[in-house]
Image 1 (cartoon, helix red, strand yellow):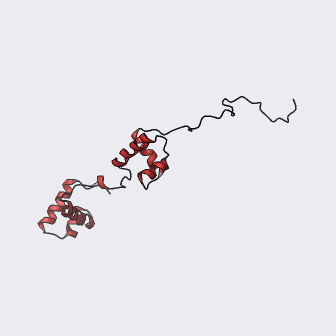
Image 2: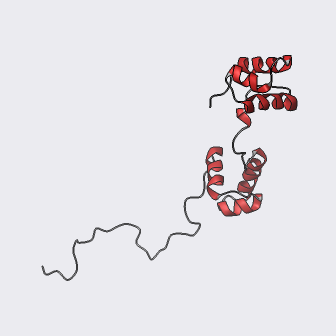
Image 3: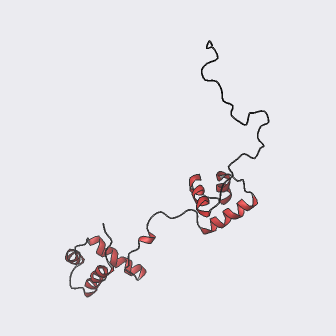
Length: 138
């Protein structure tokens, strides 16, 4: 359902304040639900404002500004922390991808290679091999 304009909200509240009609009649007059009329009156009673409150809706962020500061501090001290270690240090109850996305948003990168040196025994460059099996006759 679309958000009611502030003008319509004000007209509904004024009609309620006059007390000429019941809330049901006001709802029918302005073509809104009875619940909407009740919600507007309740919102005004609690907050003193009847504006739309969409910015307060939805899921709340688990990783807030204080966590971001702590993330930077932990990563300065130990830059090769895994996401799981970081989550444990911060005491967060969130998924590892959530921490990853915060790191990306902060412009921080993660270590992309192992801390051990490359093996001296393994070949480091690919040598083109013959195609087919070794059992083939020439």
